[in-house]
Amino acid sequence: MTEAERIEALLDLVDAERSESADRSAQLTVLGLVERVGRNGYRPTTAGWNLLGERGRAFRTD
Image (cartoon, rainbow, N blue to C red):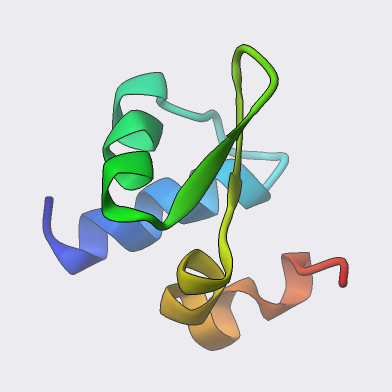
């Protein structure tokens, strides 16, 4: 998974208008960029938000 693919997968998680891919989210978990929430959900870790940088700032809630 390239860096561009990682960013796209992270944006899929945080943008409500995009659909999430469970396979790509699972790959991000292995890389430490997302954490599992519940049975089917994922959310970005601090490392994931850092990778998104300015692209993800509009979606960050904390």
